[in-house]
Amino acid sequence: MTLKHVISIAAATALGMTLAGCSGQTASPSPSQTPKPTTTPIPAPTPSPSVNCSAVLVLAQARQLLAGTDFEAHYLTIGDKFTLSVWLVDPEIDPATPVSGMAAADHQALELGLSISYRIVDQIPCAQRVFDQVNPMIVDGRFQHWYRDFLPVSAFVGLHDPTTDDLIAAIEATGTALEVPRATVPQAVQTPAASSCGWPEARAAIHAYFGAEDNTAAYLIIGSRLVEQGNPTPNAPDDVGVEVQWPVRGTAEAADALVRERLGHVAEALACLSPAVDSLEAFVVDPAGRTIVYAIVPGSIIRARTIPLPPSGVRLYHMTPPTQP
Image 1: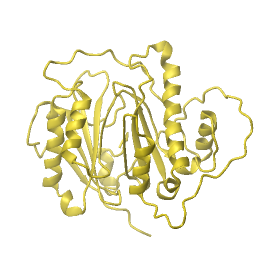
Image 2: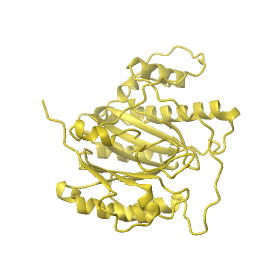
Image 3: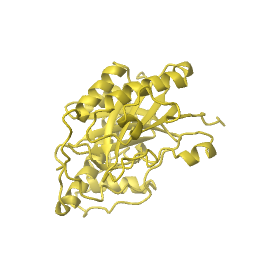
Image 4: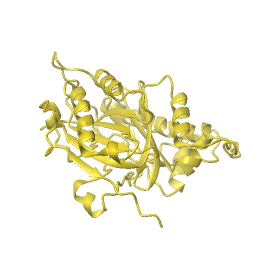
């Protein structure tokens, strides 16, 4: 889930432990305008009144829509926004893109992130009834960050066969500034140790532990500063951030001891990861997708294979739901 600056240590108490997400406030340069014949916007199909729209239904349909790609999808609250997050690997982006190819790769990632978000809203009518925003996260085949944003669902409603320029204009018309895509060239590949594992293996182990529960997720983003306070590896050129989410049926399942136990299993799966993990973020959500516990495990603990996790090293934040008016 995916989520840069979702919460900071200093602000957690001041905000009454209410989870806050943020999207970037710097508008990305708009690509050159592509002439397009004028079309009359056609409203997206609306679900029949008999359809019981729910986050579970939208998530299932989004996963069907994304079938055939390497992705993770889940939902949660970020601040006061109900969010559908999609992490997706774009195999067409060169993981070793040189400086000369950065502009094209950035545009490709932006285009894919906007396109995926639009398709979800356009092809899943219940999405606009249920969710406030879509959180696309685009990475390359080495799981390096290229584009991540928080886009209002309302921006996509009523569009018909839009170009990327149309989507950018519609988003900016809502007052939302697009995040700037990747700014630096990817780092050179490091030779992994013989005993190490790659992300596909670690991810499979995490999902095997979670089981077949709905609304679970596990994904890796390199070079996005997911948790700046996560004790990154000294001199690491790009931070290696892992995010996981799992649902619980009630607050009893979100007790510190149980959360720490689950984090310990995830940490075991990540201990062999190459490149080595710098930070692990966890979101524990209730059946409605409300975040009730947010946790950070510094990569130094995971890399040291300190199991069980030391209580002093794991930061747990129990979220207080906003007061209803």
